[in-house]
Image (tube, rainbow, N blue to C red; front, side, top):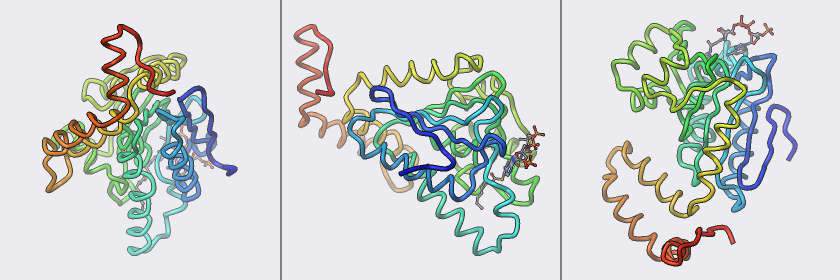
Length: 259
Ligand code: CO8
């Protein structure tokens, strides 16, 4: 499939998807959301991909939000529909993928852009990054999971402040909030994301899938995350990857999970 708004690349087991609308600060229009779904879905199904890095083209912006020009004249019904579809095909889709997604935040991560980063499993940022959920300044609220994921990540006190002030914070402050894991210069950002990705792909793909499932169970209503952990833990014992991992340890060699 050819894409108009994103670039895809793969090196070894690491897939990189770059949102490529730099003139619009990589704002997420409907077509870009659909293309991201296709690319992520393909990566999720591809055994050769162990991790995905998501980033934005250019040096100014990761993603400056949903495309305001596209939803400016929406009705109540269309607004709800766009939000629901976005949750399903992109934001929830990423969270429940069977391999980790690393957001490499290389500039503005605003509105739907910060929501995209928060749906990802790991966030790293360049020191020029600015993060915020400015939706209330436009007369709407975050509609791609921001009210929930920001609260889970930083607690309700900080979430209330960020969302109701529509303010932006810098990368270092985001790190002190626990919203991003690492802050580096722009030149160091992709090498850092790749370094994390390369560590991940050394490990058992099945165990990583199981770990994502168990960690996500922490905040699913009506689900006991400890039960999910126990079940996923037990299931690992029946996998060839468990045999390889433990055998490699005993034989004092590096495990090879991707034969
Ligand atoms: N949507 C559409 N176009 C955008 C967006 C956006 N979110 N952000 C920037 N652009 C465009 C600008 O319109 C401009 O285009 P043009 O040159 O054609 O006029 C171009 O990108 C460059 O932007 P600026 O000239 O504004 O660049 P500045 O450096 O002066 O400012 C800012 C950078 C501060 C990032 C500024 O562009 C800005 O405030 N952008 C909007 C940020 C924002 O409010 N984001 C949240 C959007 S709402 C949202 O994400 C809701 C998510 C949930 C939706 C649920 C479905 C209904």
